[in-house]
Each structure stands twice: as C-alpha cells, then as structure tokens.
Image (cartoon, rainbow, N blue to C red; front, top):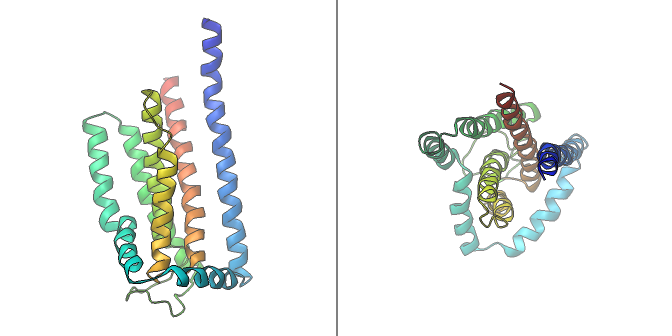
Length: 224
C-alpha cells in the first residue's frame, strides 16, 4: 500500500506539467496565428464576420448589461479585488506564495498588454471607444481578465478539490466570466473581436507561465 501511494504522489506533478505544457502550446499556437493574420491584414475579415453577428443580438438592454460586465475587467475593479484577496490569503490563510503569483498575474499581464499595444500600434479604426485614446490590439480587459481570473479560478478549484468539496463548476464558471468580459467589450463597441481573441491568447499564455512559476517555487520549497 505504501509503495502504491508513493508512486501516485510521484506522478501527480508530471500530470500537471503535461496539461500545463499542452495549454501553453495551445495558447501559443492561437496567439501566433492571430499575430500572423495581423501582419497579413487578415484580421479585418474575421472582425467583419463576428461584428455582423454581434449587431444582430445587440440592443439597449444588452448594451447596458455589457457596460456593467466590462467593469469587472477594469483596473478600478481588479486592483482593489486583488488587494483584498492578497490580504485575505496572507493574513487568514498564510498563503504568501499564492498571493505573490496572483499579484504577478495581474501586474505582469497589465504591463505586457501595454508593451504589446505599443509594439503593434493598431488604432481603433473608427470604433466608438468611449473617448479612450491609445491603441486597441490586444485588448487589455481580455488579456488581464484571462490571466487574473484564470489564476483565481485555478487556486479555488485546487482548494476545493483538496478538501473533497464540489469543484466541477469552477473551471466552466471561470471561463464564462472571462468570455463575457471580452464579449462585453465588443458589444459596447470598444474593441474589435480580434483584439479580444488575441488578448485571450496572450492572457492564457501568461496564466500558464504564472502556474509554472508557482509550481517551480513549490518544488524549491520542498527541496529545502
């Protein structure tokens, strides 16, 4: 029995590493395809197709709801939320490294999206961007939400699983939150759809890298 248990513990990190690598290459592939289409001027076709569909479902009520939802991907919500979560994890749960990775996911994704916007330099091209100046590609709301809410969802999922509590709902709920935040930015006519898709891909990459960092720290701690 003891030997079997030891083998199971030995393979658990390999299992997580495998799925992490798969996720990393999946996000990297999507990001690379979108960037290639960006330089080949192919994104406009994708945008037109999605925007034609969005126009059919758009309306005053949906637009009003979208304005509320998109706020959950803004710095005005994410920064205070991040501070509250970090304080709770550090003070109540003594989870300093989880708090550190959550902070890195937010700060890193925010800085990276600014750098990418400056590099690609895609203008809003006449979009009704609510008086917001600057570039639109990739979407900061989409990228930061994918990284930040992704990390929160993952840690919550692991926490519930370890305590044998229902956790199945966390991954789909996390994905739904990220998707509707991105969709809301298209519905309020702030971003092109491909701004959002590229933000999701870049945020997903940063999310996986943050997880790799977390488990690398965990391994270092165990070796001490």
